[in-house]
Length: 224
Length: 227
Image (cartoon, rainbow over all chains, first blue to last red; front, top):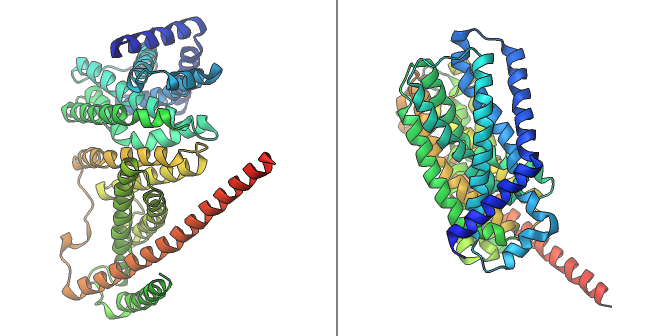
């Protein structure tokens, strides 16, 4: 099978599994909803203030919720030794990784699509800057989260208390991406400053770490 | 080996004592900041030592991924451990100085933020080492170290731009330093690097012994099982 075929079949398998069980998406959605409600209770800002803080709140909610999905990425493959079977098969490691990352990208994107209207309603948001820029920010930011998230989930699979380990590894490395997403979103919402630099930074982050992940994933997969 | 260690220990002790004397008594008192400025000699020395150790960790991790020999793995581990210790010293002495001089304990100035980010990355590295159950823990840790190394320039860019839009607090004297102060600083840097080196050697021996013990125990239990 070629690279693309393996990616596609793994991706379709994951989506089908998720479609039938809806484990990750339900947990993520409910978790993000709780975060939104709790933030809303604790701050209750006016429109001006919420424009300044909403960028941070949105991404923190998405980040925490994404960890729920990321933790399930590989745990699913441990049952029935699927990962061991994959390791002994002649299939290369990268298509598996790419399929997992794409799957997470789709799940987290669905979460964002569903949660953004709620944020807009609860925080009375209206962008003062060019709102279309939020689309590339969301795409690049989500990819930044899931690419390293998928990778570190595979690393934390080989540790004790793996569910706790993932955020501990992921968050420090994600600092520049988080700064990028939050500041770009805030720049668009307040309209004070151009978001271009931050989008470029996110793009650079995505390129650097996608390359690094693809180079190093095989080592992680083989490290039992 | 043993003699080299003793010599290094003596040199370190002498340098540390002399450095302490030079920093607290011999160095001229700074005009505006007064005696508070003397913490600078320890702060900067620790910072340089920590950055040196983190660089060693990055290089050793890449070397380990390429060559897979145990020595580079142990070097990576101990340089991260000792580096975190010195980085903690930096993060503690910084606020001690900042409170009387800037009037605040902490600010998200680029340099402070970057040092803190580095500290976070290496603490997570040590956590991974501690919690790893895989026999390939060294590979995973080396991979994480490479990610950390790639992260630093991006962090730097992000933090520079993030704070660049705001007026930065005044950083002591705009970078010029009295010749005598330079001399005291360099003595202290030498002392701290020697101290780090000493700690690394001790830690290295300990790690080698620890691994030997683990190996022996594993062998013994194998032989028990075979009987």
